[in-house]
Image (tube, rainbow, N blue to C red; front, side, top):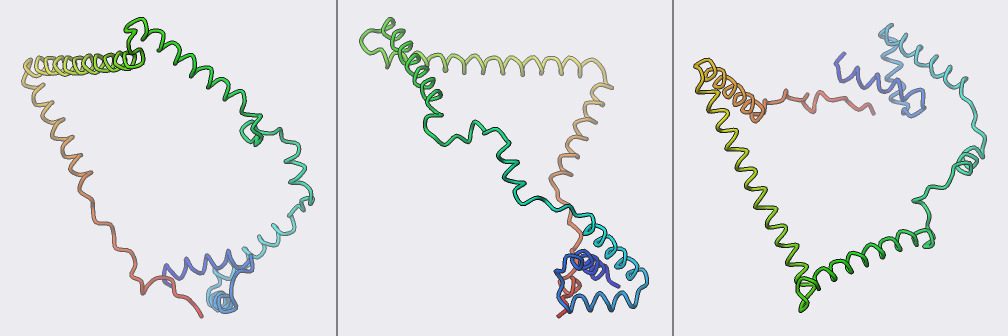
Length: 197
């Protein structure tokens, strides 16, 4: 028996107990069970398991879901009435007003002619200074790394050899990860599970 046929028949065994097979599929299972004692034993075992599960089923009361949902406290995010959002809207308005007031007051002290434009210019200057400081810090960090590696490599020949081996190993690993291996060919469409009419 082909592997795809075995997989299909095993799947049909699970579907048979749910009553989702056609008559042709059930007759195919009967034919396979008559030819293979192992398959017949597996089919009988599946039928017994289904009977055990059916006999141990506990019926749920019709109003069980509504009673459980009624006993749960209401979620805060599920409030649909606009009154539930008044606190968040008030806090947002208060914070926005305070930010506008503070930026306007500080800008008026710096340049009374155009307070808002001066505040925006001050924020822009702060961002530009931050970028310059960050670029300088990155440059200094790379310079320090270069000096440390240069001192380590200049110390001895074994350090240079070890560094070379690590670099070559990382490069080989990167090349291996970038080159995809051809995946094994999937079974041809002709050998896929056959449909029984």
